[in-house]
Length: 194
Image (cartoon, rainbow, N blue to C red; front, side, top):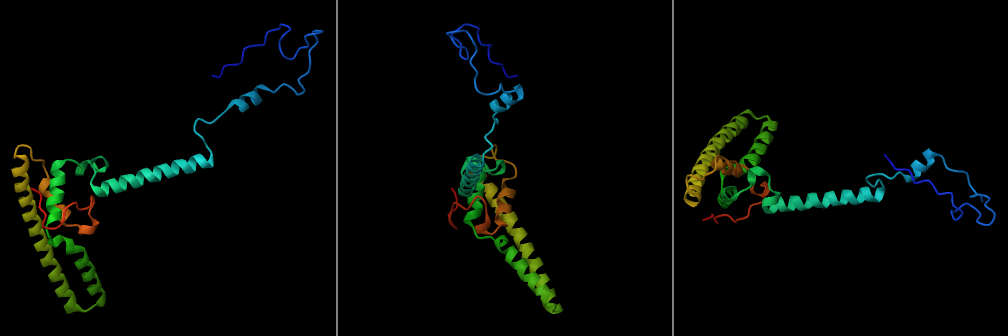
C-alpha cells in the first residue's frame, strides 16, 4: 500500500500562503484527485518500452547463440546432462575416431525411397534386400563398436567406475552422419583417445 505524503504544517512559512497578510495564495490549478495522483505515481515493475523489449530479445538471442556454439564445441556447461562427464567425452571421441557403416544409413534409405517411386518391381526387391542386409551389418558394427568402447573405457577409468549405457551411447552416435553430430566431433578419424 502506498504511503500518502505527510500533511503540510500550518505555519506562516509554508508554501501557498502569503507571509505578509496570512491570506492564502492560489496555486493556479485545481487540486488533483486521489486517482490522478496515484496514476501519476504508477510505474511498471518491468520496463514496457519497445526499446527494452528489443534489448531483452537481443540478449536472449545472443545467449542462445552462445549456448549453441558452446554445445557444438563440447563445452561442459552448455551440454545436456546426458552428454556431460569425462566418460561421455571419451565415448564421443572413440565413436568419432572411426569409420562406421551407420553413417550411410540415411542416404541409403533416401536412395531406396527413390527406387520405390520408380515402380520397377525387380529393382524394388533388390533395393529392399540390400537395405535389410546393410541394416544387419550396421547392427553388427554397432555391437562391435559398443563392446570395444566399453573395453577401452574399462582400461582408462576402471571397471568399478564405468558408467551404465556408455557402449550404447557411443554406438548410437555412430548412427548419425558425422557432420550432423552434436556436440561436433573433436577428433579426426583414426585419432582414437588413449
